[in-house]
Structure formats: structure tokens, C-alpha cells
Image 1 (cartoon, rainbow, N blue to C red):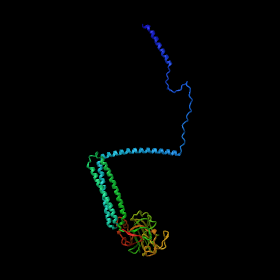
Image 2: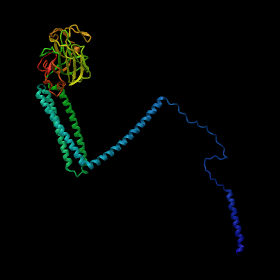
Image 3: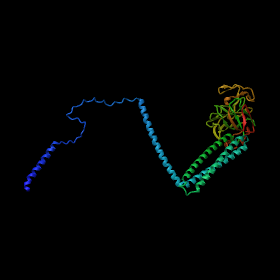
Image 4: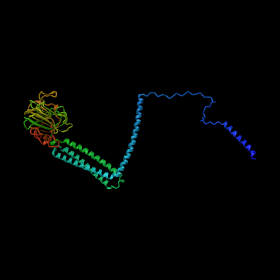
Length: 456
């Protein structure tokens, strides 16, 4: 049975194999990309379109185009940098605020007490200084009755400042007590401590403003007061050939040595401004103490004998103390400014003797009739007492006149020592009490002419 069907099975298997091989030959597998719009070889080609032109080439940019492009780029960079800076600042400020809050929360109690104590000490020191200033002004008012109105104003101002300082002290004490009342609750009172710190900063700022106002008030008071304890001064309101002051010495001026000192506060200084001048008909320039810009000049026996010091005169309405000393024995002449010797010249009018009978004046110098001065001829004036002086006839030159204030004019018939001149030049000293024996301020007759006048 089996042997009979075996040939049938072999035949059937061979048929199946033959059919499979024939089917594979008819089917062609295409593994390439399939495109629905692909043009096959058998289809006719469509007419080709005209190729599109290539991209346009950019024309050369003008200098204005380049400039605008650069500006746009720089503006964009600037905006980016600003935005970046703002972000950094916001982040840093946020972190800084957090650090400050943590610091205050951790150390607010002890640090706050120390800061408050320091602030209270500052307030106490300010109050003490204000009290001293008030006492000083009261003493000045008692010694100078003419300045009572100005002192009263300064006293009222200082009284207001003292009240403000006391108010700040009370606020500091309250602030300190509030910080010390509950030292354990640091975390709970964080916002209060921050507010207290801000209040302390405000108090310190107010104290700084108070100090600035006090310094201005003291400076104004010092400018109004006369130096070296002087109670009066000569005012020369403007430059004029009619404005001067004549001096009548207490002793004859036939001297072989002398020292002349004075305080001057010039409003403005010309090329040649006369402070002190003595002359006769024969020689109008026996003694001269002059200003020229920032220089001080001193002559004896004529303008040929000149002692000069540069950079010693201060402007801006500041008092300057000047002294000129001379000895005939060796002809040594010295010039002093604010208590310091600024010039020393030997051989100045050696063996010369000052003649008596001349004219001594402040703020001007007498010029002989017909003499040239500063390029012009000076006439004899109007003939009044304020332009004619005994001893010789002549006139004054407005270009030489002094404008400002003068006080403490003294003259001795000897050469003062360095220590004596230094004491006279102390603004806070009592130099006006040391009066000369030839000319003594407050004792010797000094007559103002024209618009010159004595002030307190």
C-alpha cells in the first residue's frame, strides 16, 4: 500500500516546486523609492520651463547705511546689557536683603544696642558743643555791645539747634529702651528692628545736617567779629581819593627804628593798595606798607628801599595781620604776615633818620603836587580839608586807595621781638590790648575823612 502511493507523492511534490519557481520569475521586487509623479521612460517629456534667475547680488552699502546699521547694532547691544544689568541688580539686591534680614535676626539685639549707644554719645557731644558755642557768644555779646543784634540772632539760631539736638537725644533713648525691652524675641521683632535701624539712620542724617548748620553759624559769627579782641575798626567803603584817615602820632616821628602793625581785611586789591603811609614835603614816601595782589610791600626812606613778600595776602574777606620793622643801625628791614617773618632785607636806608613834621595817613598816600604816579599827574584836589594836609600840598590817587576794614593799628619806636609779633597776630588773642607808644589803637587820635568811619 505504501509502496503504491510513494510515486504519487513524489510526483505531487515536484509539481509544487515547479509552480513556485515559475511564479518567482514573473514577480520583480522593486526596493527603490516610489514616486507617483515619476516620469517613466515611455512617457513623453513635457516642455521645460525657463530656469529662474539666480539670487540678486546686494549692492554696496553707503556710509549712511553702514552708520545706521552700526547704530542699530549698538542700540541692541545696549538694551541687552541694560536688561542683563537690571537682572543682576535685582538678584543681588534680593540676596543682599535676605542676608541683612538674617543678620538682623541673628545679631539684631547686641548690634542694635551698640549702635544706639554710639548714637546717644554723638548726640551728647553735639549738645555739649552747642552749649560751649552759646557761652562763647554770650561772652562776646557782653564785651561788644555794638554787636548785640547779630549776637542775639546767632544765640537764637544756636538755641534752636540745641533744642533739635535734645529732641534727637530723647528719640535715641526711646529707641534704645525699645530694643532692650524684649531681647529674647529676636525673630518675632525682626521688622521692628529693621524699622529702628532705619530710624537710627535718619537720626544720624539729621545730626549731620545740624552740625553743618552749626559750622555755618560759627563761621558767620567769626566773620562778623573783629580779630585779636579789637572792639572797633575803620571802614573804607570804596576806593576814592577823598576817603582816608589821618593820624596824629603821640610822639615825634624822628625815629631811627620802629615797628608798625595792623589788621587788614581788604575787599579787593589793586596793583598798588596803600595801608599805612608817612611822608614829608621833601619825601612823601618815608614809610609805606602796601598790598599788591597777594604780595605785601614795605619801604623805608623811599621806594628804592623795598622789602617784598609774595603769596602772603589772603583774599575772600579774610583778616590778615601785617607788621613792618626797621632799624637804622644796620639797615635791617623785616616784613611779617600772620605772626611769621616772610621777608628780611639788610641795607635798607642804613644810617637814615626819619624826619619829623610829616603826615601820617591810613588807606591812602600823599603825593606831591605835580608828581607822577601810575602813569598820571595828581593835582592838588578840591582844596578841602579832606584833600589838603599840613606839611605839604598835594593830592590823592583813587587807584591807590584801600577798600575794606582795618583795625589794631599800632606803632612803636623800637623793633619788636618775634614773640611779641606772634602774640599780636593771634586772632583769638588780646593783641589789641598791646598798644604802641607812637600810635596806639584806641588811644591815638585818628580822624576819618570822606566816607571812612569807625564801626563796632
